[in-house]
Length: 422
Image 1 (cartoon, one colour):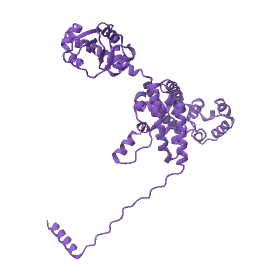
Image 2 (cartoon, rainbow, N blue to C red):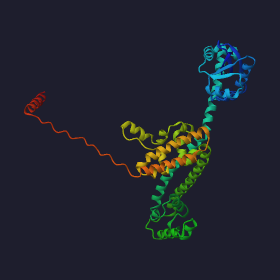
Image 3 (cartoon, one colour):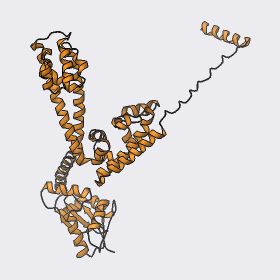
Image 4 (cartoon, helix red, strand yellow):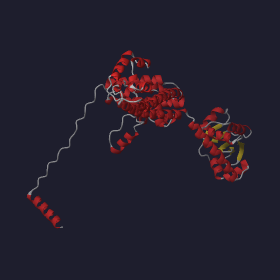
């Protein structure tokens, strides 16, 4: 059986026999960018034209019946693409490849007609471009865009909470009764932005802003009888500007949420269907991307976002957390305390399956996963409807004081006297 070993060099594909003799070669053509793309394809196991060409040459004119490459995935794909008559398998490292790399100076001159310094300079140029292409491919993944978007949403939530607290406290000096009458932050900020002075809180103005007749009437009456301090327009202007910024940031948050929802449909439809777009995006962000999330076990997904509590428990020997960011799932935070851990474990198991489906197959299996999850949640609520009985605390028995006889007391007295003399 004639055997050939393929060596995938940076500048071309070289075929060697068992003794390391060159029996065929195909040099890469094209620009540095094109060669870098070919190298990236080969690393992922994708066959390129030059590899197919040299295989056809080996099995046709050279009579080769067995070809060995050093990439398992490439060997599998080549075996599926190339017609019968030749066996293709992987072996890492293979002996011809080791001979080639051990005598690189000899081979680059024979195969490529270059000196070793010229070859190394060319390799450096191509591998630099190849690395740049890899970084670009990683940066272009949509799951990383989603991770940045959900981080922006969380940042906006913190900012909006700070602004709402400050404006309510600040404007409350002028119209304190509005604090209890309007609980929704955005509605409060809209009223402050549009109306300003409490004298403008009339029935007509409030109904024009979309309030119901009954609510508008109560707010208008409170404004007319308010005990708050008087404010000039000059004093109110910075408050209204601050409230206007809140409204604008709130609109931006809504747009980001819509973007995340649409992007999750393309990137992770199963995760989105299972836990919603925002929680799904947070899981992608905490894991570092869809592929990394798909490779995590369910036990790790369960505590994503609770790393500090987990490591503190490991360090101190305390109880580990039962859930991380998946606590935001409605069925978990609405459940009684003693049911949450079991529901979180069931949800994490389904999320692990959904992430793998999104990352590797693209099949939409979320409806079946959600149905199974809801059955398990109902089962948990039925079996553990009542809280578990508390375990009785075992108190350590107090040690009775040791009874000392006259001899023991005399010895202790002499010991104390000796220490005193020292």
